[in-house]
Image (cartoon, rainbow, N blue to C red; front, side):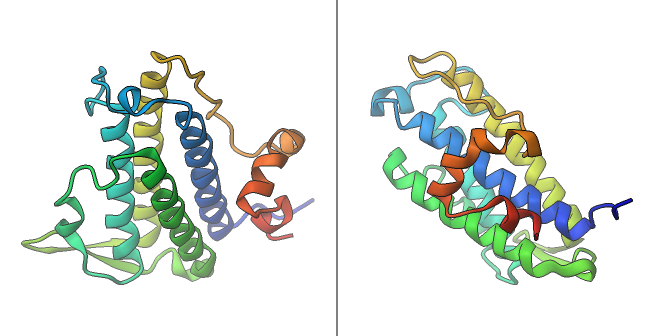
Amino acid sequence: MTAPPSLALALRSMAFNNAWANHRLLTACAGLSQAEFEAERVGFFPSIQATLNHILIVDRFYVDAMEGGTLGPAAFTQPVPCRTLAELRPAQAAVDRRLIAFCEALGEEGAARIVAVHRGSYVQRERADRLLLHLFQHQVHHRGQAHVMLSGTSVKPPQLDEFFPEGEAPLRAAEFVELGWTEAGIWGR
């Protein structure tokens, strides 16, 4: 009988899966023209551009807090920091790498660490694991909206509803090579 996965491993694998889903979605979006990227669509945010930039902004906000920074509401001053997908892709990949690094450094006790989230007029104090779960849920929610918006374009939306099934590793092998990852590296083997 094998031991159940640890919380640290689960959070770490969620950070990798999050980055992989972002990579898949943004790779698909690369097939859009700038006009399609900016086009008004039905969603919580009015375009694919606005939705993907919102994901980036919120990631920067929370990852900065988890790293001990004090960016706070300044993260939200520019609603579309990346006008083009060519700007957005490396910016999102960079914050995804920071999130992975944070989760890799957590360790078993680190998930209970208290994080100071600067909210402007006050500082919210939350456990790291709760903030991470909130951030992952936020990502899934808005990626899903961008995915639906993408279905209204000429670009086929990518499959995003997976969580690294072992038997499907060959299906993501090329993407892992692009990202510089291995299955063993993600799962700590």
